[in-house]
Every structure is written in C-alpha cells, then in structure tokens.
Length: 337
Image (cartoon, rainbow, N blue to C red; front, side):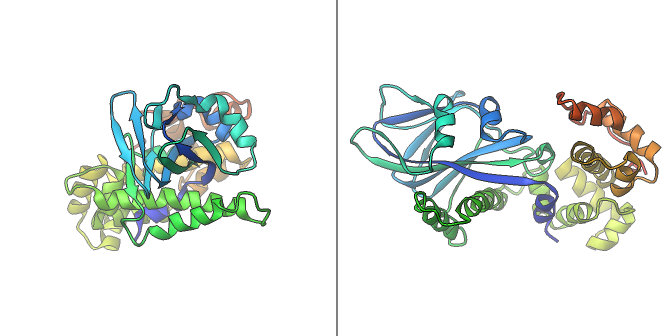
C-alpha cells in the first residue's frame, strides 16, 4: 500500500514551467516570497511551491536567514514554503527583480532568456507546483526550508531532466500539446523530489512523509486516504495491515502525533471543505460522501474545526472572502459519524 500515491491522488495538483534562462556570470536574481507573486503566477491556487532546476553550470541560492546552497548540474531545489531568496553566480552589480519582470516573462513566447555578461554560463529552469491547502497537512507538513536532489545521481530520475530539456528546447515550435506536457513534467518533478526526500530521511525522523515510509503507519495512511468515508475502526485497520491495535496506535502517534481515527476525522472535514468550496452539492450529500451519518453531525464537527457552519463557509467562498483553515479544535475520536 502506497500512502504517498493515495494522498497525491486525493489532492488536486497543477504544475508549470514558467521561465528558463541562460546566464553569463556575473548575474543575479532576487526572488520574492511566493505569497507576493502567487496571484500573478497562478490565480486561485491555494498553495504554491516553487523550484529551480540547474541544467548547466552552477548557481548559488541564498536565503534571508543566511542559509546558502551551491547548485550544480542536475540539481533540483524545491522550496516548500516559498521563501524569498536570491539566485546568482559571481558578484553582479545589481540583482534583477524577478517580481517586477514576472508579468513580462509570463506573457513571453517561452524562448530562452539571456542575462548577464561574458563569464561562466549557467542554464536553469524555474517553475511551480500548485496544490490545495490540505497538502500542508499531508506531504508538505514538516518539510525544511528547501529540498535539494540531484536528478543525475539517480538513474531512475535522470529521464525527467532529459524530458524537460527536450520540451523546453521546443520553445519556439508550435507542436500541439507542448504546454500540457511541460505541466505534467513539472508535477512529476514535484513527486520525484518528495520520493527522493523520503528515501533520505533519517531513521528517527517523524512527520507525515516519515510515517508514509513506515510499513505499518504507511499502510494505515493508504487505507484512510483510499476510502475516507469507510466505517473504519482501529480493529479494522489492525486486521488490514497485519499489526496489533496497540502497535498501530503507538507508531501512528509517534510519526503523526495523533490517533488514526482522529486523523481520519480531520481529513474527512478537509474533504468536506473542498466540496463546499468547489461544488453546489447539498450539505447533506457532502456529509454523506465524506463519511458522516447525518448532516447535523457533520455541521457540528465542521463548525468546531473551521469556526463556521458549512452553509456560512460556502457563502464566504462565493463572496470571495478569505477562507478559514481548520483550527486547532479537533473532532471527536469517533470521527463525528
């Protein structure tokens, strides 16, 4: 059972490659936080993660807290929290404000952009992954400031870089389907980065991705995400994954910090909130589809978690008002059924 696949299937994702450049040292870009440019990059996307893929030469990424990383060919660096940073090589006189030039870049024809002077050449590709806010509580939970993986070090990943380089080389062609292929490749990069990060986690790591890697916890997570409306009990989960209830409870709490049933209750409410935001289904139907036996039980649990009853939450969405996240209040251990 593959918990990461089940979770990714449950979260709507989009991907894009929006910039590829050839830079001659010295050069530098100042990249704002994703929160500042999200409305331009991907209007309406709830959560945005940006990345850089170096295909030739080298670059240096620096963050406001002093962290600095060197990027070499094949390096993919993903910024789960979209922190502001600079990317450069050499000592440029000025840093290009990528926020100011972003609209122009997005309106361009996708051909290679060239910057800098006459020194060492660096080529890189930038993009982003868009997903629902529920991703924060799943595979983005607890991730560090950046994740760096080298696609060329892993033979199983090298094809991704080759495919993307081929597609961006077609920038000036009019072959149909290119933009969709680039979008799918961007999503694939995101997933591959998560997979590589999972494999590199130390044995004592906790959090969602570490739990998904654990045979017992990962099996439970896969079941809950595959069938969130199921009438699950701890005993059912124990039988399904071949472990005792006490082992499941202990290991789940160690990695996830909660019980499987409480986790399921929160996930059902996340799914319910999505349906309220994106569909016109009656609230009673939403409640049934996410595993609640009555509209009243769903409404009580939803208000505890989001601070609003479902109908009011939906009206706020329709009016374009800021939407609340699920708060710290937790549904009852019985998942509110």
